[in-house]
Image (cartoon, rainbow, N blue to C red; front, side, top):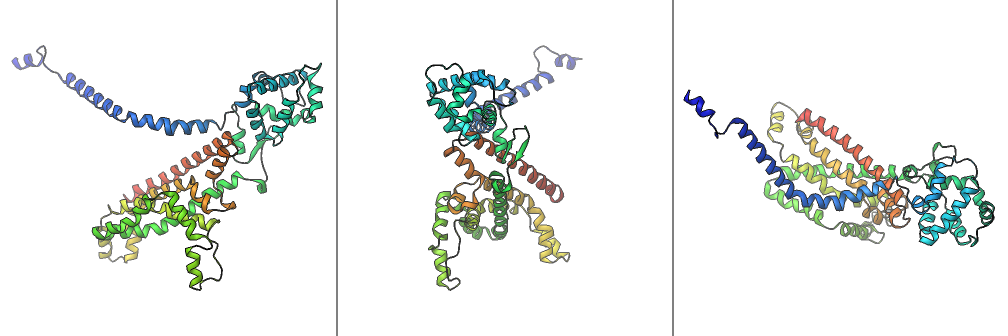
Length: 417
């Protein structure tokens, strides 16, 4: 009876009070951890996530014509797209051109429309310059007299598509497709394909580089993992030092080594192995050599980290039971290292997908990767919409390959882990 009285005495702690205190302490610890990570989260959001999100959003945005010519945009969106529009649409076009020229946005509109038809910029700029100062009785014949292309249904169809936002045009153009006048999606002929071929080329080069890194890096990682620690640490410097060297420096070094009068060709010719310089640069060979050298440390380190955790007891047990050393290696050792192989291959493959400097310096005209086309659209063509669409497909491909690699590595872990 006294014990029960003490348990229920006022002010004494209960089991519920202890749980509440524990939850409060855990929430406080979580808040402290969040506050410590908040500067990093803000930095990543402002310098990484937000710019990428804005670039990807450009792939469906189409704001040039709607922002510069709002009245014409509303009329074009309501128009059915059949034939040549009526007088009212021509009057709105003239007013929109005059307003855009006065506000300084005519160049932006002309550049956007030039993406749809190469001569659209000259048509728009010429029409804007030659607009009559006094409104004519009818704008349609006046504009057609300035340029006969205003009487073409194709011109107005492209203008209508340029006024629609959001738009699938950039996403279609990124895979060499377009919307026909009948409203269907059609691909350009294979001999005129640019971006589809570039995507295939990018995946092919990335896969080849990944395979080369695996063939060269697996034995090196095995050697580093099985040597005595002192010798392993010394050899590890040959992996780490190039890894710390600037990417541009390493690529430029290969540029010097691989050129026709470079060190490698001079050595080959001096030994009598060739009578003329070997084509090692400005082609696929140079790209594969340079990218493999740059990305090889990533694969070695990923596999090495897993190999260090593999106990040699398994190999000795297999050999003691009569297995040939090669059989024991392939059936016992290699399966245990597959998680590191999968992680390293995925890392190398994803990095290779977005490579820019090495293919640009060592590759030729037929070795352009998607990253180079994205850079060309942003720096030269100023077509941010198409650059965003290409980037969106690159992100999608990366996500697909991540899913595939993750499934493969997950199965291997369940089977051999």
